[in-house]
Length: 342
Image (tube, rainbow, N blue to C red; front, side, top):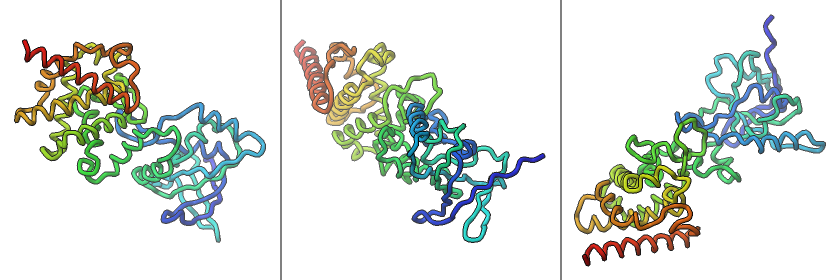
């Protein structure tokens, strides 16, 4: 005998310019027929942050208390319906009908942590459900709702912005270059940037997308390289610098936990040195490639202790970056002087 369809009484109306259903349903029912679309950094599918078990457990404890409440859960019935769900007019209201075997047809646009641990609770919760938003449209709604949310990775929001851009290279060149570093087959940063999602990749994500793009923004500002070449070529130049860093300091690069190269101070300070080398090479009317960067770096990088307890220990914040840059520049200046002076 076939199981009866699930019927949820609702009202239908507009949330600003989007058609939505609003209603109430048991938490366990909503949990059974909804899912969170977590960003998979390996495939590029999804858009949400990873599940936070503690956050969800806290909400479960709270919602079971007398006097508890919550704002409506935000969901979306994904297209195509294929008969798995439909909306039936019933006088002045409507009914959301979900086939018993439909499975998880609603995306949890803004409620994954509230629903996460409620699979067994029949407690009634309010919800607002969009009808047939695409994943891209869902992502836009999610980003607007959560752009100021505490704990939401700025890198994840930046990744969303990259998906929305019509011409990312023109609109956000620093983000375009950062994603190039993460995606290029020849980049030492390949699949090493944390985009704010989940990954099963064997490589550890060691730096956030936000940090790299901020460093690149500084490089673009200091060099004005986009006045010399298109952004795609500038991306190759930035990649060449980091290839040189990895090749001249292979041990430190291979052990990021114990060295400063891929920590904030190291990334920002080395970016300033990259700008110095690029400007010197441009002024000399020479080609600036990975070999050029490697030659310049090899003159002085061994004079610096890049370990966590070494030369850059204790530097922090913007003031720390300036001090670290000044220190590295001084080491480089002394090394160049010794070479010139014999």
